[in-house]
Length: 151
Image (cartoon, rainbow, N blue to C red; front, side, top):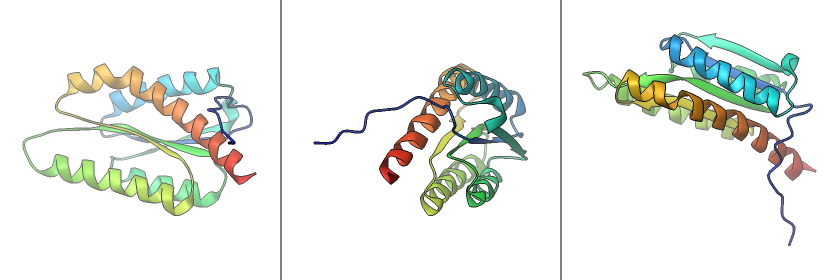
C-alpha cells in the first residue's frame, strides 16, 4: 500500500490569506500568528500574500479570485463572526462557510477556513492562537498533499 504522509515543509509554496476586517483586532492577531507559523514551516515571506475585505461574507469572493489566478498552492480565511441578538449571525456563519468550501472544491485548492464563529469576543480571543496556528499547518499540509497526488 502506498501511503502519503503529512508533509509540513512549506519551502516553495505560495500561500494566500484573506482577512475579514469587521472584527479587525481578532483577524489581525490571527494573521500575525499564522504568518509566523508559515515562516517556521519554511514558507518564504515573499510567497505569502494578504488581502483584507470588509467582512466574512466578502471573504469567499476574494478567495475565489486568488484561486482563479492559479498563483497559490493554498489559501487561508481569517475573521470572526460573533453572535449578536439577531439571525444575522447564522446567515453570515453559514453562507461564508459554505461559499469558502465551494471555492476550494470548484478550484481544487486547499482553503483553511479559520473564520471563528463564537458566542462572544472572549471566546474568539481564546481561540486566536490555536486556530491561526492550525490554519497555517493545514494550508501547508494540504498544499503538499495535493502536489503529491498530482504527481
